Amino acid sequence: MLNVIEYEKVIELAGYKREDFSVCLGCKICASVCTVNDLSIDMNPQELLSSLFLGNTIEKDNPLVRYCTNCYRCTSACPWKIRIPEVVRALRESLSVASPFEKAFKGSIDIWGRVYEPYVFLKAVPFLLKEGYIKYMARWTGYISVHLPHKVKRI
Amino acid sequence: MDYGYYPGCSLTGSARKLDKGVREIFRKLGHSLNEIPDWNCCGALEYGDRSELTRLSRENLKKAEGMCSEIVAPCPACYKNLKEANSGNQFAILHPLELFEKDIMGSLNVKRDLKGKVFTPYYGCVLLRPEETSIRNRNVMEELITFFGGEIEGEKIKDRCCGGNQFFVNKWATERLSTLILEKSKGIMVVFCPLCHMALKTFSKDRKIIYLTDLVLYIMGENNVI
Image 1 (cartoon, rainbow over the protein chains, first blue to last red):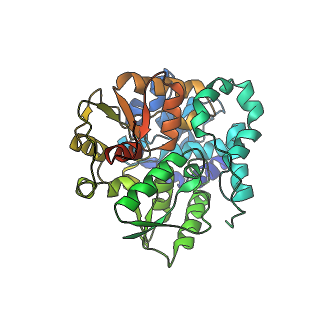
Image 2: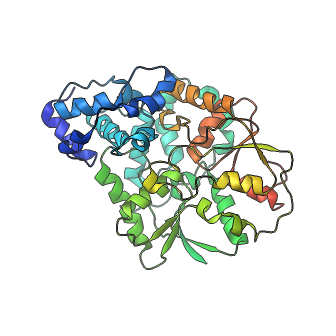
């Protein structure tokens, strides 16, 4: 859970200012087109924006924080084109909810400047085993290639 | 024509097939792709800090300075991020789909047609949204497929989300979203996003999921099967 001052940081990380959300009309068209609807989960992007604007509580298990797919359907439909997926990403970062795979992804960029997939995969093996990803291995054979990481990049 | 080329991480890893296809088709069209030296990750859709995400792609644009004015980026996430970082419109950021327009395809050496074959073009999210960074022609895959005699059936699901972004977080969510797309489509799925390719392929039982480049190479007589 974050306090109100930390919300300012979230809004800033997403590239917005608090007053940018004051234009929200409350039309909830973002909720009507959201992909998370297809998962039969009760959610509402507009409520998330209101919560950030008003400083209401947003928990780690908020459906959007957990399931937003970054599809930008909400942004396309929004009359003000508010980029809600970017707000969600900033919120995820502030609430530290990255999965081990996502952490390995960023770790790879920190080391090589690029994503080195074998490293990401190996680093996330405990997570992949625990979560049952191993059953997809047969279908992933076409993607697996053995190669060395690219040299360290300056970023 | 000379273009700068930004393959991105996935095209040098799990989506090498797409990289190979893009390079091959550009070569056949008479264009040369010059890889940006020492390029780094664009940040994909992983960074919560928007300024960090833009900084990563701006680094790539700096590395391209002086070598080209037009950059081709096949991965939808790279394409989006480079476009967003290109604030002063210093470069023209292009997606291969924008160059595979009908008039360009007309100049290809066509050896096969697609008569009788049914396809579902699937763009996914990032190629079509948000609008300011999307590709110009939102029907380019449909136009190409029908131009070469292919048929398009099934519901309009081309811009639905496959949930690929949730794959390594909540895989059941990806399974449900990808399954919805597979159920509503018919024939061979044609994609251009490495993440969509992986998500749909993982959850499909017997469907063919191919890159558009595979299809173009088939038409040109390079691939024997699609």
